[in-house]
Amino acid sequence: MRLLQSLLCDARTIQSKDPAARTLAEVVLLYPGFHVLIFYRAAHLLYRRKHLFLARAVSQLGRFCTGIEIHPGATVGQGLFIDHGAGIVIGETAEIGDNVTIYHGVTLGGTGKDKGKRHPTIGDNVLIGTGAKVLGPIKIGANSRIGSNSVVLRDMPSNATIIGIPARAVRINGEKVAYHDSENLNQRDYPDIVSAELAGLARREVELSKRLAAVERRLSQASQEEEPS
Image (cartoon, rainbow, N blue to C red; front, side, top):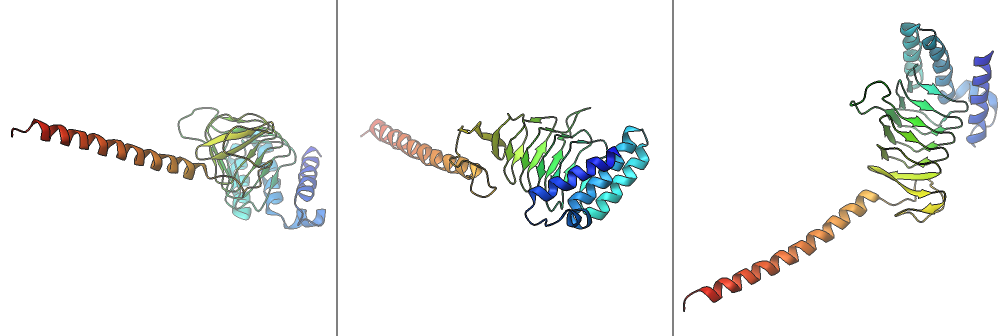
């Protein structure tokens, strides 16, 4: 009964968040983001009861059917909305709060350097944009938004807008931290931090080149003055 209640909550959340979902029946019958939660919640129950091989078998069946991989050891709260879902990977020690939204191509993975707790903890009401990578035993605060294709490698506060490679919080509690001047992250209209950094390096290179040329001219003039007449 508890499993069915969890799945019903998941289905209703998907319907409320996806404007393309016209009915609850459509979500239940046609949405891979919901189907994978059926496999995951069954596999997680087996995992908690120490039926580890069977749990992985159910998990792999879910991956085969949906293209979404959620390790049965992961902890997933209520109302997870996986939109489209293709290519999503969620690691064994990942923890996901309630009402989280995850778009396709997202990885909640490890760095290969950690033992025990190896995967991220995601707070309630977090949105993770397409292609984002959240790596290591880090924490993402509640109500935060992670931009598409960002790579998050360190803890992030609650109520933050997080973008870039490596990612940084550019807005916290509605206050601009750096680079960003729009009110809400829409996965499209945010600045390219990498390009900004490269442009800064290019300007620095031009400045250093001018200084080097000036030094070379002075050395050349000094050399000419020292030559015997």
